[in-house]
Image (cartoon, rainbow, N blue to C red):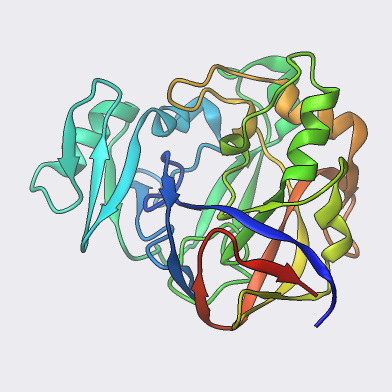
Amino acid sequence: MGDALGTVGALRRYPVKSMLGGRVSGAEVTERGLAGDRRLAVIDRETGKVASAKSPRLWRALLTCAAVLVDDQVRITGPDGKVCWSTDHGIDDALSAIVGRAVTLSDTPPESGTLDRSRPEQVLQDGLDAEVEADVVQFGSGSPPGTFFDFAPLHLVTTSTVDQVAALSPRGVVEVERYRPNLVIDTTGVGFAEQEWVGEELRIGDRLTLRVVASTPRCAVPTLAHGDLPRDPAALRVLAEHNRVPAMPGRDPEPCAGVYAQVLRPGWIQPGDSVRF
C-alpha cells in the first residue's frame, strides 16, 4: 500500500434521505454503503418521485428534521422537537404536515427511481421559492439496486476541501455537515485534495477497500439552512467560482466538492483509521 493520505476524522449517517443525520462511532461498510445510511426516503404521492432537498422550493423542510437509527427503527425529530418513529402508524401524516405535501415514508425506491434536481446556480440567482428549471435525475446509477443513494453508496470529503472553501468564503467558515459526507477524511494542507483520487482505489483501515468513481457535483443543498445552521449561499458560490470541473469524463464542468466511491471489499470503519492508495 502507498503512503497515508490521511485518517478518518468522522463518520456520518443519514437514515432518511434529505433529512439531517448524525455522527457514528463506527460502522460496517458493505457494497450498500455505511450500515443504515439512506435506509428510508420520503415519496411524493402525487408524482411518485423521491423527495429531495435538491429541489428546495418543495422539499427544503426535510432539512428541519433529524433522523437517527436506533436498533432497527429510525427516530425522527421534527422542527418543533416532537419525536416520532419510522414505524408509527401516523408517520406519513406527520411528515406530510411538515413538508406541506402528501408523502409516504418508504424503504423501497419507486419504479421510476427519479428525483428533481433544481439547477443550483438558478437557485442562487432567483431564490429558494422561485420556480427554476430542474433536471430529472435517475438516482443510484452507481449503486446496487434498491438503494436511495444519489449516485454511489459512499461520499467522502476531506478537511482540505472544507478548509479551502472556508478560506474563500466571506464567512471564513463552512460547516462540513452542509456537504452531507459519510466519511470526513482528515488531511493536511488546503485545497480540493480528493479530486485527485478519482479512478484510484483506497484502503481504509485493515480491510475496507473503495474505488473512487467521480467528483461530487454540488446542488443547492449546501446553501440551505440545516437545522440550526443558517442559509449559506457561499457554500456553493465558492465552488462555482473556484472549483468548476467535470464530475466525470464527458460531462460539462460543474461546481464540485468531495468524491463518490463504490465498495470493492467490505469492512469495519471507525475514526482514526488510515486512508491509503
